[in-house]
Image (cartoon, rainbow, N blue to C red):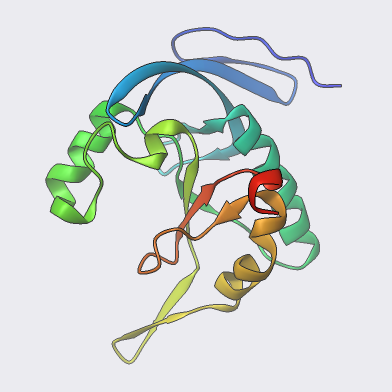
Amino acid sequence: MTLLFTLVGNGASLGDAHTQTVVAYERGDPRPLYAQAIHQRDRRNKILLLSMEAAEQFREMMVRAAKDGFHLQVISAFRTHREQRILRKRKGDIAALPGWSNHQQGLSVDLAGTTRKIKGKRYRTILYWWLVRNAKKYGFYNDVPNEPWHWTYKGVRAHG
């Protein structure tokens, strides 16, 4: 049994659990979200978070992937409103409007290693095909077809 507690701000850790309350956005509206660490950090050393249920399922999927010889390296998970605004400004219409991204709901992850460039052409990797076959068992789906790195948690029972 894992003990969890919630706090606002930078979060804290208790054993393996790291939970915090963040401001999430769903269809443009802010709401509180209990988010949990997925035991990885981004390039800036920021703890990567997902909604509690998505984080639990993602950690289980990481274990299965490791047993099958794959490392699921997360580039991006939960994003703040500010982070989504910056991304939208940098990427334009390719990125969701702030307040409308699944990342801001704590449901989506962007994974490294799902594509590989060979002679200027981008190909999907073995990791991508492993995810296609296995991610749905944990409730994750590649819901943006032209972004093989983007996987969103939609629930195990609803789609499994």
